[in-house]
Amino acid sequence: MSAEANIKLIWDFRGPDAEGLAVHHEKHLVQYRDRNGMIHSQTGSNELSPKHWVAWITVAENEMIATRDALRPHRGEKLI
Image (cartoon, rainbow, N blue to C red; front, side):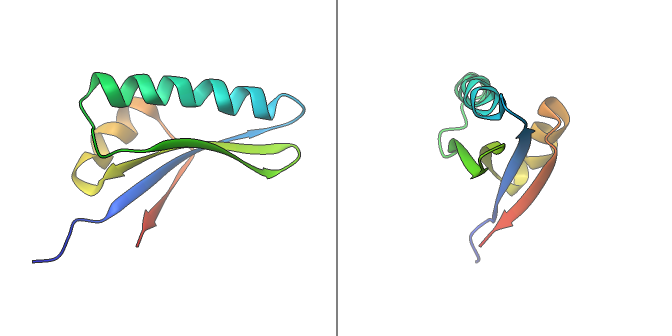
């Protein structure tokens, strides 16, 4: 039996306020994760370039559709 894949849902923030927006958005992702008992999910915010930051949450594949519909990420990546 293979392990279920994880999906990283990502929000992009660009411009001079990108860092602050991404860090703030991550706080809301933590709240969502905790409120929904997603104990294996991780969150983060990272700089891709000085004016491009991302906020993200990892979810189990079986949680992806509900999380995507609730939070409307800009994009997603399958984690291996």
